[in-house]
Image (tube, rainbow, N blue to C red; front, top):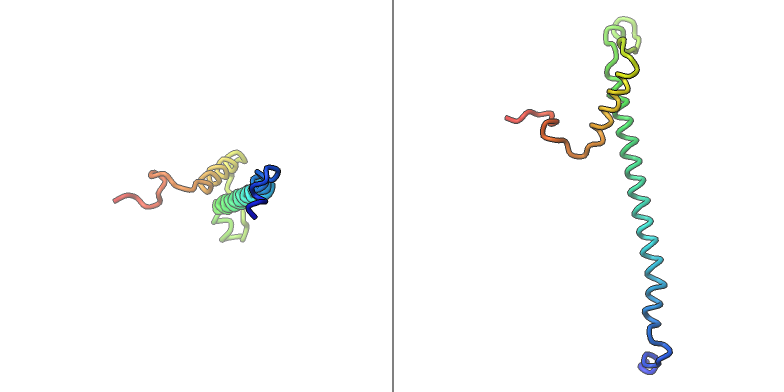
Length: 107
């Protein structure tokens, strides 16, 4: 065994072998981590958009619904609905709320 390692022709073969094996393995594992991060971000944004849409639907006209069973909005322009949607979407995407955004007031 020592004769094989001491041969000048075989010096560095372990380094080359490790380079050939470890480099593709590291690239593959990094690629898998990035794919996981991407899918996680996509799922987070889809859930935030669905929550924002549900929050927009909560602004329906309760009188029309109770009297006639109509699920309709008050006279609101489209820009106000879009602005509310963006506001709810931004609020849903925040991971840590700021101190002024806590639902419970400080005592």
